[in-house]
Image 1: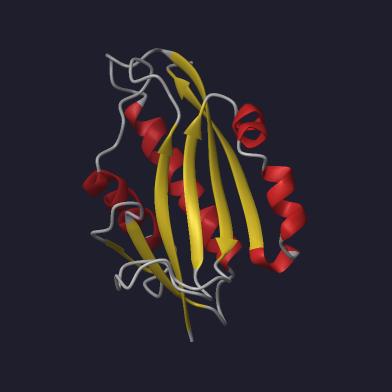
Image 2 (image 1 turned 135 degrees about the horizontal axis):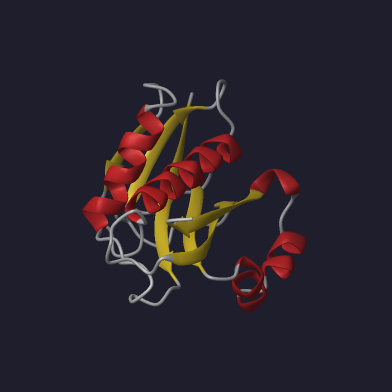
Length: 163
């Protein structure tokens, strides 16, 4: 059986520090990065106002948190490679978060690209401070409202620059 997760992108950074990603570039990062882990994990760009990427993966083989970890690694690797460009701010600590939640409420749209019950909504966050971001969205309150099996967080620090 396949699991389905939809990724959105939350770019919480100054554009002077690092360039934002367009939808196509954002999707390409995961298509390439996850393909290196397994051909069983499939990604595609979707046309939805909130969600950008659909990922399908075999649930007997991969947990949603594992796929989330692969997503964080792919984005971190992309941003580190970008940091070698001469016009990027030389030193930047970039916190990457992959915040996942299992949808348990009825769909809010009839759109086939929308998140459906039993699927994972994933917020991929780029921020200078994971702690400040998580506090601002009341992450701890979210955790208390859901069973452990219905939520996950992957945190990754990407130190950018030419150290």
